[in-house]
Length: 400
Image (cartoon, one colour):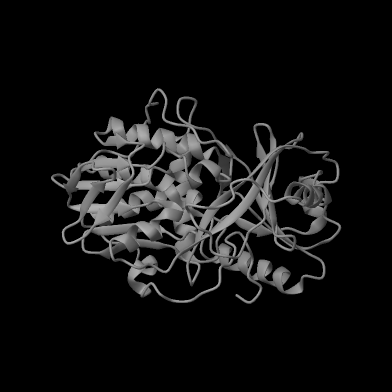
Protein backbone atom coordinates (compact mmCIF):
# COMPACT_ATOMS: atom_id res chain seq x y z
CA UNK A 1 0.00 0.00 0.00
CA UNK A 2 1.51 3.30 -1.04
CA UNK A 3 -1.28 5.62 0.02
CA UNK A 4 -1.02 7.49 -3.30
CA UNK A 5 -3.99 7.72 -5.65
CA UNK A 6 -2.84 9.43 -8.89
CA UNK A 7 -4.67 9.91 -12.14
CA UNK A 8 -3.19 9.21 -15.56
CA UNK A 9 -1.22 12.30 -16.46
CA UNK A 10 0.66 12.56 -19.71
CA UNK A 11 -0.35 9.02 -20.75
CA UNK A 12 3.15 7.47 -20.77
CA UNK A 13 3.71 5.05 -23.58
CA UNK A 14 4.31 1.40 -22.71
CA UNK A 15 6.87 -0.47 -24.75
CA UNK A 16 5.07 -3.72 -25.48
CA UNK A 17 8.26 -5.64 -26.22
CA UNK A 18 7.38 -9.22 -27.02
CA UNK A 19 3.65 -8.56 -26.61
CA UNK A 20 2.74 -8.37 -30.29
CA UNK A 21 -0.74 -7.20 -31.22
CA UNK A 22 -3.10 -9.97 -32.36
CA UNK A 23 -6.69 -9.98 -33.61
CA UNK A 24 -8.33 -12.79 -31.61
CA UNK A 25 -10.75 -10.26 -30.14
CA UNK A 26 -11.57 -8.40 -33.34
CA UNK A 27 -15.22 -7.42 -33.42
CA UNK A 28 -15.77 -7.87 -29.67
CA UNK A 29 -17.11 -4.91 -27.72
CA UNK A 30 -15.98 -5.22 -24.08
CA UNK A 31 -16.54 -3.05 -21.00
CA UNK A 32 -14.04 -3.33 -18.15
CA UNK A 33 -15.20 -1.93 -14.80
CA UNK A 34 -12.46 -0.91 -12.41
CA UNK A 35 -9.25 0.82 -13.47
CA UNK A 36 -6.93 -0.66 -10.89
CA UNK A 37 -3.97 -2.86 -11.75
CA UNK A 38 -6.02 -5.86 -12.88
CA UNK A 39 -8.62 -3.85 -14.79
CA UNK A 40 -6.02 -1.71 -16.57
CA UNK A 41 -3.98 -4.79 -17.49
CA UNK A 42 -7.05 -6.65 -18.76
CA UNK A 43 -8.09 -3.63 -20.84
CA UNK A 44 -4.61 -3.42 -22.33
CA UNK A 45 -4.48 -7.13 -23.13
CA UNK A 46 -7.96 -7.06 -24.66
CA UNK A 47 -7.08 -4.03 -26.79
CA UNK A 48 -3.89 -5.63 -28.08
CA UNK A 49 -6.00 -8.65 -29.09
CA UNK A 50 -8.12 -6.38 -31.24
CA UNK A 51 -11.19 -5.94 -29.01
CA UNK A 52 -13.04 -2.64 -28.75
CA UNK A 53 -12.58 -1.82 -25.07
CA UNK A 54 -13.96 0.81 -22.71
CA UNK A 55 -12.36 1.03 -19.26
CA UNK A 56 -14.64 2.54 -16.62
CA UNK A 57 -13.93 3.64 -13.08
CA UNK A 58 -16.08 5.40 -10.51
CA UNK A 59 -13.01 7.47 -9.59
CA UNK A 60 -9.62 8.00 -11.19
CA UNK A 61 -7.20 5.32 -12.35
CA UNK A 62 -5.75 3.46 -9.33
CA UNK A 63 -7.97 5.40 -6.93
CA UNK A 64 -9.13 2.25 -5.13
CA UNK A 65 -7.20 -0.66 -3.65
CA UNK A 66 -4.35 -0.45 -6.18
CA UNK A 67 -3.46 3.05 -5.01
CA UNK A 68 -3.08 1.68 -1.48
CA UNK A 69 -1.32 -1.60 -2.31
CA UNK A 70 2.09 -2.66 -1.03
CA UNK A 71 3.74 -3.33 -4.40
CA UNK A 72 5.48 -6.49 -3.14
CA UNK A 73 5.95 -9.07 -5.92
CA UNK A 74 7.32 -12.63 -5.82
CA UNK A 75 6.76 -16.14 -7.13
CA UNK A 76 7.51 -17.86 -3.81
CA UNK A 77 4.47 -20.14 -3.79
CA UNK A 78 4.48 -23.86 -3.10
CA UNK A 79 1.46 -24.38 -5.36
CA UNK A 80 2.32 -24.98 -9.01
CA UNK A 81 -0.37 -22.69 -10.47
CA UNK A 82 0.34 -19.85 -8.03
CA UNK A 83 4.07 -20.08 -8.74
CA UNK A 84 3.46 -20.10 -12.51
CA UNK A 85 1.26 -17.00 -12.31
CA UNK A 86 3.78 -15.30 -10.02
CA UNK A 87 6.57 -16.05 -12.49
CA UNK A 88 4.56 -14.71 -15.44
CA UNK A 89 3.73 -11.54 -13.53
CA UNK A 90 7.34 -10.83 -12.60
CA UNK A 91 8.52 -11.43 -16.15
CA UNK A 92 6.02 -8.85 -17.44
CA UNK A 93 6.93 -6.37 -14.71
CA UNK A 94 10.57 -6.65 -15.71
CA UNK A 95 9.73 -6.22 -19.39
CA UNK A 96 7.37 -3.28 -18.98
CA UNK A 97 9.30 -1.34 -16.34
CA UNK A 98 11.61 1.52 -17.23
CA UNK A 99 12.38 5.19 -16.82
CA UNK A 100 9.34 6.21 -18.86
CA UNK A 101 6.88 3.73 -17.36
CA UNK A 102 7.27 2.56 -13.77
CA UNK A 103 10.10 1.19 -11.62
CA UNK A 104 10.56 -2.46 -10.79
CA UNK A 105 13.35 -2.94 -8.26
CA UNK A 106 14.75 -6.45 -7.96
CA UNK A 107 14.96 -7.34 -4.27
CA UNK A 108 15.20 -10.71 -2.50
CA UNK A 109 12.18 -11.83 -0.52
CA UNK A 110 12.70 -13.47 2.88
CA UNK A 111 10.00 -15.13 4.96
CA UNK A 112 10.65 -16.50 8.43
CA UNK A 113 9.20 -17.98 11.60
CA UNK A 114 10.51 -17.37 15.10
CA UNK A 115 11.72 -19.88 17.65
CA UNK A 116 8.78 -21.43 19.46
CA UNK A 117 6.60 -21.20 16.35
CA UNK A 118 7.35 -24.81 15.43
CA UNK A 119 4.47 -25.46 13.07
CA UNK A 120 5.15 -22.41 10.91
CA UNK A 121 8.87 -23.17 10.91
CA UNK A 122 8.19 -26.69 9.66
CA UNK A 123 5.78 -25.35 7.05
CA UNK A 124 8.48 -23.00 5.74
CA UNK A 125 10.90 -25.92 5.38
CA UNK A 126 8.30 -28.04 3.60
CA UNK A 127 7.28 -25.19 1.29
CA UNK A 128 10.87 -24.47 0.24
CA UNK A 129 11.35 -28.11 -0.73
CA UNK A 130 8.13 -28.03 -2.77
CA UNK A 131 9.09 -24.72 -4.42
CA UNK A 132 12.40 -26.21 -5.51
CA UNK A 133 10.56 -29.24 -6.90
CA UNK A 134 8.34 -27.07 -9.13
CA UNK A 135 11.18 -24.81 -10.29
CA UNK A 136 10.88 -21.77 -8.03
CA UNK A 137 14.26 -20.19 -7.26
CA UNK A 138 14.10 -20.52 -3.46
CA UNK A 139 16.24 -21.87 -0.65
CA UNK A 140 16.12 -22.39 3.08
CA UNK A 141 18.66 -20.22 4.92
CA UNK A 142 20.19 -20.86 8.32
CA UNK A 143 20.11 -17.89 10.71
CA UNK A 144 23.87 -17.30 10.56
CA UNK A 145 23.89 -17.29 6.75
CA UNK A 146 20.89 -14.97 6.76
CA UNK A 147 22.70 -12.58 9.11
CA UNK A 148 25.82 -12.62 6.93
CA UNK A 149 23.83 -11.71 3.85
CA UNK A 150 21.56 -9.12 5.52
CA UNK A 151 23.45 -7.53 8.43
CA UNK A 152 20.52 -5.32 9.46
CA UNK A 153 18.22 -8.33 9.89
CA UNK A 154 17.94 -9.81 13.37
CA UNK A 155 18.26 -13.60 13.17
CA UNK A 156 19.01 -14.82 16.71
CA UNK A 157 15.33 -15.73 17.23
CA UNK A 158 14.75 -17.23 13.76
CA UNK A 159 13.76 -20.90 13.68
CA UNK A 160 13.38 -21.24 9.90
CA UNK A 161 13.65 -18.91 6.93
CA UNK A 162 13.25 -19.10 3.18
CA UNK A 163 14.59 -16.77 0.51
CA UNK A 164 13.34 -16.27 -3.04
CA UNK A 165 15.33 -14.62 -5.78
CA UNK A 166 12.61 -13.85 -8.35
CA UNK A 167 11.14 -10.95 -6.42
CA UNK A 168 10.98 -7.18 -6.29
CA UNK A 169 8.77 -4.20 -5.64
CA UNK A 170 7.20 -1.34 -7.53
CA UNK A 171 4.73 1.51 -7.16
CA UNK A 172 1.27 0.04 -7.91
CA UNK A 173 -0.42 3.31 -8.85
CA UNK A 174 2.27 4.08 -11.45
CA UNK A 175 1.91 0.58 -12.88
CA UNK A 176 -1.85 0.97 -13.25
CA UNK A 177 -1.48 4.43 -14.79
CA UNK A 178 0.98 3.10 -17.36
CA UNK A 179 -1.17 0.10 -18.29
CA UNK A 180 -4.27 2.28 -18.60
CA UNK A 181 -2.33 4.63 -20.86
CA UNK A 182 -1.01 1.69 -22.87
CA UNK A 183 -4.56 0.39 -23.25
CA UNK A 184 -5.60 3.80 -24.50
CA UNK A 185 -2.69 3.83 -26.92
CA UNK A 186 -3.81 0.41 -28.20
CA UNK A 187 -7.29 1.77 -28.91
CA UNK A 188 -9.19 1.44 -25.62
CA UNK A 189 -11.40 4.27 -24.39
CA UNK A 190 -10.83 5.46 -20.81
CA UNK A 191 -13.86 6.59 -18.82
CA UNK A 192 -12.72 7.65 -15.34
CA UNK A 193 -15.15 9.36 -12.96
CA UNK A 194 -17.94 7.33 -14.56
CA UNK A 195 -19.78 5.03 -12.15
CA UNK A 196 -21.74 2.30 -13.90
CA UNK A 197 -24.03 -0.61 -13.14
CA UNK A 198 -24.07 -4.03 -14.79
CA UNK A 199 -27.05 -5.70 -16.44
CA UNK A 200 -27.24 -9.23 -17.83
CA UNK A 201 -29.19 -11.09 -20.52
CA UNK A 202 -27.72 -9.45 -22.56
CA UNK A 203 -24.61 -7.93 -20.92
CA UNK A 204 -25.07 -4.20 -20.60
CA UNK A 205 -23.44 -1.17 -19.00
CA UNK A 206 -25.69 1.48 -17.48
CA UNK A 207 -24.08 4.76 -16.54
CA UNK A 208 -25.53 6.18 -13.36
CA UNK A 209 -27.35 9.51 -13.11
CA UNK A 210 -29.19 8.99 -16.37
CA UNK A 211 -26.14 8.31 -18.51
CA UNK A 212 -25.63 5.96 -21.42
CA UNK A 213 -27.05 2.44 -21.57
CA UNK A 214 -24.87 0.31 -23.80
CA UNK A 215 -25.15 -3.34 -24.76
CA UNK A 216 -21.79 -5.07 -25.06
CA UNK A 217 -20.47 -8.51 -25.93
CA UNK A 218 -18.80 -8.90 -22.54
CA UNK A 219 -18.45 -7.13 -19.20
CA UNK A 220 -15.34 -7.65 -17.08
CA UNK A 221 -15.77 -6.61 -13.44
CA UNK A 222 -12.47 -5.85 -11.70
CA UNK A 223 -13.81 -3.35 -9.20
CA UNK A 224 -12.03 -4.63 -6.10
CA UNK A 225 -14.09 -4.42 -2.95
CA UNK A 226 -17.08 -3.07 -4.94
CA UNK A 227 -17.21 -6.13 -7.20
CA UNK A 228 -19.59 -8.09 -4.98
CA UNK A 229 -22.17 -5.30 -4.76
CA UNK A 230 -21.97 -4.51 -8.48
CA UNK A 231 -22.68 -8.11 -9.39
CA UNK A 232 -25.36 -8.52 -6.71
CA UNK A 233 -27.27 -5.61 -8.24
CA UNK A 234 -27.22 -7.60 -11.48
CA UNK A 235 -28.55 -10.71 -9.74
CA UNK A 236 -25.19 -12.49 -9.51
CA UNK A 237 -23.94 -13.66 -6.11
CA UNK A 238 -20.24 -14.34 -5.52
CA UNK A 239 -18.43 -15.82 -2.51
CA UNK A 240 -16.27 -12.82 -1.64
CA UNK A 241 -15.85 -10.55 1.38
CA UNK A 242 -13.93 -7.25 1.50
CA UNK A 243 -11.73 -6.76 4.56
CA UNK A 244 -9.54 -3.99 5.90
CA UNK A 245 -5.72 -3.94 6.11
CA UNK A 246 -3.27 -1.26 7.26
CA UNK A 247 0.22 -0.04 6.37
CA UNK A 248 2.67 2.80 6.90
CA UNK A 249 5.69 4.47 5.34
CA UNK A 250 8.57 5.44 7.60
CA UNK A 251 11.78 7.41 7.15
CA UNK A 252 14.67 4.97 7.60
CA UNK A 253 17.83 3.99 5.74
CA UNK A 254 16.73 0.59 4.47
CA UNK A 255 17.41 -1.19 1.20
CA UNK A 256 16.84 -4.97 1.51
CA UNK A 257 15.44 -7.57 1.89
CA UNK A 258 11.70 -7.56 1.55
CA UNK A 259 10.81 -9.54 4.67
CA UNK A 260 7.71 -11.26 6.03
CA UNK A 261 7.82 -12.24 9.71
CA UNK A 262 5.10 -14.90 9.79
CA UNK A 263 5.09 -15.18 13.57
CA UNK A 264 4.54 -11.43 14.01
CA UNK A 265 2.32 -11.34 10.88
CA UNK A 266 3.97 -8.23 9.42
CA UNK A 267 6.04 -7.37 6.34
CA UNK A 268 8.64 -4.76 5.40
CA UNK A 269 9.95 -3.60 2.05
CA UNK A 270 12.20 -0.77 0.88
CA UNK A 271 10.42 2.39 -0.26
CA UNK A 272 11.69 5.58 -1.93
CA UNK A 273 10.99 7.42 1.33
CA UNK A 274 12.58 4.75 3.53
CA UNK A 275 10.54 1.64 4.23
CA UNK A 276 6.96 0.43 3.83
CA UNK A 277 5.53 -1.94 6.42
CA UNK A 278 2.13 -3.49 6.96
CA UNK A 279 -0.05 -5.80 8.98
CA UNK A 280 -3.26 -4.88 10.76
CA UNK A 281 -5.56 -7.30 8.93
CA UNK A 282 -9.11 -7.10 10.29
CA UNK A 283 -10.91 -10.42 9.91
CA UNK A 284 -14.38 -8.89 9.61
CA UNK A 285 -16.27 -8.00 6.46
CA UNK A 286 -15.97 -4.32 5.53
CA UNK A 287 -18.52 -2.11 3.82
CA UNK A 288 -16.78 -0.88 0.63
CA UNK A 289 -18.81 2.34 0.72
CA UNK A 290 -18.36 3.07 4.43
CA UNK A 291 -15.01 2.12 5.93
CA UNK A 292 -12.25 3.82 7.89
CA UNK A 293 -9.46 4.90 5.52
CA UNK A 294 -7.16 6.07 8.30
CA UNK A 295 -5.15 3.56 10.33
CA UNK A 296 -6.34 2.59 13.78
CA UNK A 297 -5.08 4.36 16.88
CA UNK A 298 -1.91 2.67 18.07
CA UNK A 299 -1.34 0.84 14.78
CA UNK A 300 1.81 2.77 13.80
CA UNK A 301 3.40 2.46 17.25
CA UNK A 302 2.81 -1.29 17.40
CA UNK A 303 4.07 -1.92 13.88
CA UNK A 304 7.11 0.30 14.40
CA UNK A 305 7.98 -1.84 17.42
CA UNK A 306 7.74 -5.00 15.31
CA UNK A 307 9.95 -3.46 12.61
CA UNK A 308 12.60 -2.42 15.12
CA UNK A 309 12.53 -5.90 16.66
CA UNK A 310 13.39 -7.43 13.28
CA UNK A 311 15.78 -4.61 12.22
CA UNK A 312 17.31 -3.30 15.49
CA UNK A 313 19.67 -0.83 13.84
CA UNK A 314 16.79 1.15 12.31
CA UNK A 315 15.16 4.14 13.96
CA UNK A 316 12.15 4.63 11.70
CA UNK A 317 10.10 7.81 11.94
CA UNK A 318 6.56 7.21 10.71
CA UNK A 319 5.75 9.55 7.84
CA UNK A 320 2.21 8.39 7.00
CA UNK A 321 -0.17 5.55 7.74
CA UNK A 322 -3.40 4.41 6.12
CA UNK A 323 -5.83 1.55 5.54
CA UNK A 324 -6.99 -0.21 2.40
CA UNK A 325 -9.35 -2.99 1.39
CA UNK A 326 -8.54 -6.52 0.26
CA UNK A 327 -10.94 -9.28 -0.76
CA UNK A 328 -11.28 -12.84 0.57
CA UNK A 329 -12.87 -16.09 -0.64
CA UNK A 330 -13.77 -19.34 1.16
CA UNK A 331 -10.72 -21.26 -0.12
CA UNK A 332 -8.34 -18.26 -0.33
CA UNK A 333 -8.07 -18.67 -4.12
CA UNK A 334 -9.36 -15.83 -6.29
CA UNK A 335 -12.47 -15.76 -8.45
CA UNK A 336 -11.32 -15.29 -12.04
CA UNK A 337 -13.39 -16.07 -15.10
CA UNK A 338 -16.91 -16.13 -16.48
CA UNK A 339 -19.54 -15.94 -13.75
CA UNK A 340 -22.57 -15.58 -16.05
CA UNK A 341 -23.06 -15.46 -19.82
CA UNK A 342 -20.81 -12.67 -21.06
CA UNK A 343 -19.96 -11.49 -17.53
CA UNK A 344 -16.44 -12.02 -16.23
CA UNK A 345 -14.90 -11.27 -12.85
CA UNK A 346 -11.50 -11.02 -11.15
CA UNK A 347 -11.58 -10.57 -7.38
CA UNK A 348 -10.83 -12.30 -4.08
CA UNK A 349 -7.03 -12.15 -4.24
CA UNK A 350 -6.41 -12.08 -0.48
CA UNK A 351 -4.05 -9.09 -0.84
CA UNK A 352 -2.11 -10.66 -3.72
CA UNK A 353 -4.07 -8.98 -6.50
CA UNK A 354 -1.46 -6.44 -7.49
CA UNK A 355 1.44 -8.88 -7.65
CA UNK A 356 -0.63 -11.17 -9.87
CA UNK A 357 -2.16 -8.44 -12.04
CA UNK A 358 0.25 -8.61 -15.00
CA UNK A 359 -0.46 -12.33 -15.47
CA UNK A 360 -4.13 -12.39 -14.48
CA UNK A 361 -4.98 -9.53 -16.85
CA UNK A 362 -3.44 -11.38 -19.78
CA UNK A 363 -5.09 -14.70 -18.93
CA UNK A 364 -8.49 -13.14 -18.32
CA UNK A 365 -8.32 -11.23 -21.61
CA UNK A 366 -7.52 -14.50 -23.38
CA UNK A 367 -10.60 -16.13 -21.84
CA UNK A 368 -12.85 -13.21 -22.82
CA UNK A 369 -11.84 -13.55 -26.48
CA UNK A 370 -12.57 -17.28 -26.43
CA UNK A 371 -9.50 -18.93 -24.94
CA UNK A 372 -9.18 -21.12 -21.89
CA UNK A 373 -9.83 -19.83 -18.39
CA UNK A 374 -8.08 -20.74 -15.15
CA UNK A 375 -10.05 -23.79 -14.03
CA UNK A 376 -8.90 -23.65 -10.41
CA UNK A 377 -10.11 -20.05 -10.11
CA UNK A 378 -13.50 -20.59 -11.81
CA UNK A 379 -15.87 -18.25 -9.91
CA UNK A 380 -18.79 -20.65 -10.35
CA UNK A 381 -17.13 -23.21 -8.06
CA UNK A 382 -19.11 -21.48 -5.28
CA UNK A 383 -22.82 -20.75 -5.12
CA UNK A 384 -22.12 -17.30 -3.68
CA UNK A 385 -23.89 -17.70 -0.35
CA UNK A 386 -21.29 -19.85 1.45
CA UNK A 387 -20.45 -18.78 5.01
CA UNK A 388 -16.71 -18.48 5.62
CA UNK A 389 -14.14 -16.82 7.86
CA UNK A 390 -11.78 -14.16 6.51
CA UNK A 391 -8.11 -15.16 6.58
CA UNK A 392 -5.17 -12.87 5.89
CA UNK A 393 -3.48 -13.23 2.52
CA UNK A 394 0.18 -12.78 3.41
CA UNK A 395 0.37 -15.52 6.00
CA UNK A 396 1.72 -19.01 6.53
CA UNK A 397 -0.96 -21.47 7.51
CA UNK A 398 0.75 -23.93 9.85
CA UNK A 399 -1.99 -26.50 9.21
CA UNK A 400 -1.50 -26.53 5.44
